[in-house]
Image (cartoon, rainbow, N blue to C red):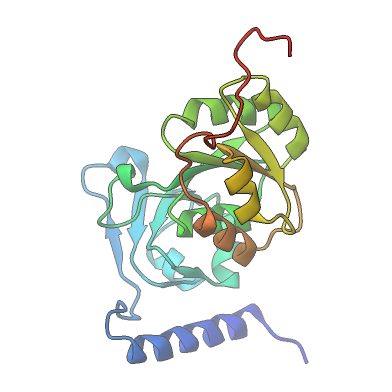
Length: 229
């Protein structure tokens, strides 16, 4: 039996409709698209539908534009395919929220639609990088605003480049990493993910579990600049 993308979309939409009838606070299932006021030059739209399918994106005229999704929005397989084929950019700003509410910055080396979509759904700002060196530079530029996560390329290279700065703590993580132990012992400012093996759900759970670091642990012995030890 062959299961088509349209069939999967229909299942997802049916499930979301059922959830909305049980939880009154959910938005209506009918796709609602709101254009950003006075931002015609950015060609960006906000989508308030909680199920983002190809039909919703076509209705929003999203091809070649940046889109903002509601927190927890579900992008169906046909929606992801539309995003991939039509150069749709995911942004972290959502309807009713300003950029000051951004949780963190997610830097993606190369192209990974699932990562971009998950980061946006989690409320993270996404930035594209072409190399590990560029990713490290972008990470440093965004550290003052929020925690940074990086995915793609060789994570150990990104972490090494960042850790050359004595004021930065970067760690390489995998799906097997114990984040509780890592944050307690190290409190990293940047986490570098393995390039492959991360699904939409994996990324979403990871980002929602990360908290903005409050600084190095009290017992942490930072190395001062210029130290030879």
